[in-house]
Length: 353
Ligand SMILES: Nc1nc2c(ncn2[C@@H]2O[C@H](COP(=O)(O)OP(=O)(O)OP(=O)(O)O)[C@@H](O)[C@H]2O)c(=O)[nH]1
Ligand SMILES: [Mg+2]
Image (cartoon, rainbow, N blue to C red; front, side, top):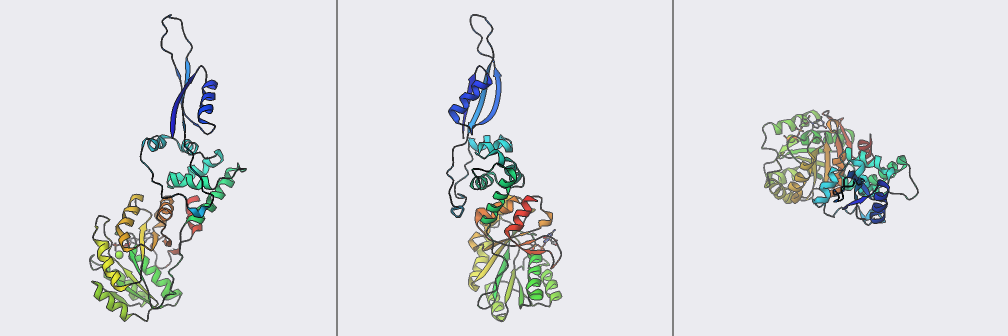
């Protein structure tokens, strides 16, 4: 962004200078009347007008959305972003070079937690030369957003032998409850053979919690303390379609935890990892947790507690920025009802409704 002050004898002239130098897209940040230096002659001199204007440098717009939204570009924390954050959403939209017909959608996205850079990139990519209707701009943005959301649908059992899926994530996000919901979906609704394994020998009552669900659904529940035990369990249940592994929730500060899990999963091989995140958590925790578990290889992300969420932009930011496909959403404590397969349409309706 380039910021410059212009002074002239009146507003129209100052504006003329702004347009001449910075072009039609310039954003007027402030206007004020200034008194010129008092002249030696003592004669009164008319006030002048000072306009502070800014212009966002043009960003190249890739023709193909498959070329992504230039997500790798670093978001530098410099003077530019400081000033940018002081602007109103409309001011931001203008500074980003969006069309007035897009301001409303931009504000909506940002208010719903979409990060400003991502919101602006989407709107710029969805720009249409001859359309000036906010409603149509919104639909175009929705369609583009839908296309960039990575998702994989439900757990795919088309593997040789049992499919092994582990749920990892911070404490209390709903890993165990979600496992019970997923188990019910496959065992009861889809009539598949399912076994549950707890790797959580750390938290008091964790195994019992899984055992209760197992008892209700009449599914085997096993407990593994390490890789050898897990290997034995997997061998024992080689007739199963799906083996779901519950893990201990650990703080993102526990750097060693994911290394320990990796050692256990590597010994088994073919473990699909679903990172479980709650939409009620701070957005920053999403990325710190992702970093914590990335040595393990995060295959999917699963968002819980949608029923308690206030805004859903962070969910979009996370999956799009990290390109981790969504698997499921949960929206309540009821087992097995409050589970649904995550689909882009759902994300769009969460953000726009
Ligand atoms: N509102 C709401 N609550 C949920 C949802 N999913 C789980 N919970 C609740 O969140 C709490 C923690 O759930 P758990 O399944 O024990 O969480 P966890 O991730 O296994 O916790 P740890 O094993 O201690 O790390 C319980 O009270 C669940 O009922 C959801 O989608 N919405
Ligand atoms: Mg648990």
